[in-house]
Image (cartoon, rainbow, N blue to C red):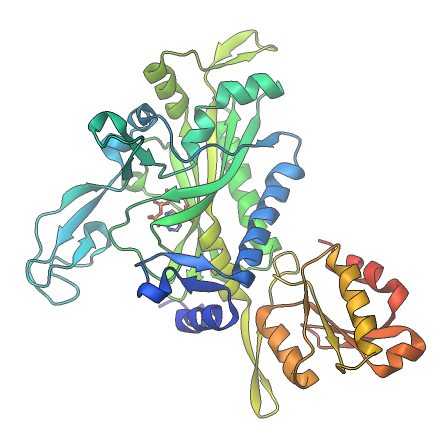
Length: 437
Ligand code: ATP
């Protein structure tokens, strides 16, 4: 057994998510749809902040990276070239007694884990969702919902390289939905059939690939630490040779210690020149790079850090969850990194009376220009602090009758619970400095 402790149970996070509006079950009024989830008002802010923090690190702060947003539906030949039609399968077994289905590679024995019944032989099940393009449901019109965003990047390699005139090494990053008809989805948003990926394809000169692979592994690992994930709950795991995808020369997973144990957050693979070469072959187009210095054409190798936006969001939520004793009660606080917190500031006027409200509203409007702000004027101030702690708001601003006299407000820090009196005229600047990252 590992000595590492998960911060909390999945049940507590599921319940907090529903109670406070982070994540709801999809189509709940119809009884829900298995493994599909909707991000509520707080969840959409949190997940957008995760994606934004990723984009900032891998695109904005780098001069060798650009973005892309390719379509979900692609030409069916793409998936023949990529190997997904032939090989994107998981081994599926059925229980002959209770009829449940399992992924054979996730089973510990040869009997049904639910009822002990006998299992069928494993058969390969393709995970791609099929749909029809246009009004006629015939074979010619079959298209797939992409099972990874990566192929949108590979097929645009020439477009991006010629329009940006980027020189190797350079990368293309994209965030978007992917779909996999998973045999056994579960563990809340950890494994779903519709999910969002944050993927990078970093193109390099063959021979330099191992060096860049190592650099990206370190850089991506550090990203989670910088955004507050506890070091002890993060680890790197190298894929064994028999685990490697058909295109990969090497792969490392960044794993998080989820309540169900160590599980993948992100995979960082060396995909070699497999994809570009296959697309050149299947499309009949020339896809390569002209290296001016070496005066030669070659097909770049590619390093692929592939992260899940939903899995990342879940890990940040779990890791931020804390229960602390508070007199006779328990203070639940989400110690989310300030970059990720859904609301950055809450405005809490101590009375619903004028002229206090007018001042509070004015401050609210000013701060809303820069951040997501919550305004709460109901119930005792202690209860309101608790509500903000529970959703991870880093700063609460209280406005009291004294504020009308001294033109100052009280700012409370979520983590230290310390309070500071700040002149209203300096509040935005004060918060800018506190919230910078
Ligand atoms: P697993 O072994 O867990 O099925 P994988 O190795 O097939 O995952 P990749 O193909 O490497 O996953 O996908 C890259 C990332 O996309 C994963 O690290 C994960 O964060 C995310 N991801 C993949 N499948 C799912 C899913 N079904 N639900 C949520 N996120 C997913």
